[in-house]
Length: 255
Image 1 (tube, rainbow, N blue to C red):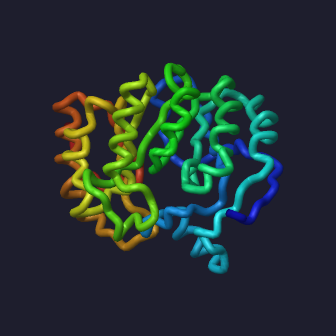
Image 2 (image 1 turned 45 degrees about the vertical axis):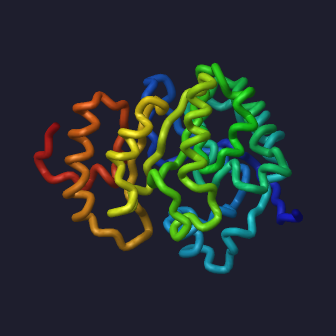
């Protein structure tokens, strides 16, 4: 598979993407994107929709490989300790990774650094690298779970949720720190309470976020979010609700 490639000046960059530091040790957030574009082509993807808005001629699924990612990572890890989102604008384990092994080679650098690595994927291909990631205090592997069932209409080329859940359970069994990202919460489809009920024994924490760059009623979240938060609190689940979603809470809401 011949994909377009590019070179960059840096690979670990300060990020404004919200991701709460639950450890209290890493106030700085970085991103590390080794690919530009994504073969999953998820219909709700904020990165795809944002790129389409500002770069209408760019083909999102025509993925570009950052060829010098490993060399840049070796240089950039000297920055002050922080959390590194791997990746924030694409999936590091999309299908091209099977041949490039770029995620694996970059992670070999990152996991030995003083940073906290947050791997976020929709692909069971990450299982290949569990030998590198297990039993490390500075690594978490997260899976985007948008439902307990597969959603081909929303995620046409991504591995289904059922495969992600199997990989999540495998990670937990191997001692890999895990999290589940219910982002986006797709109205009337995701059923986040059911996701938590099914996965709370194999996920160390849950992240919840709304749909962005799409016409979704805030009223839906305003009605449903309080019930979810009460459930999470009653069941003592380790969770974080992102600001955009949290802004939908009714005024004066308390748990």
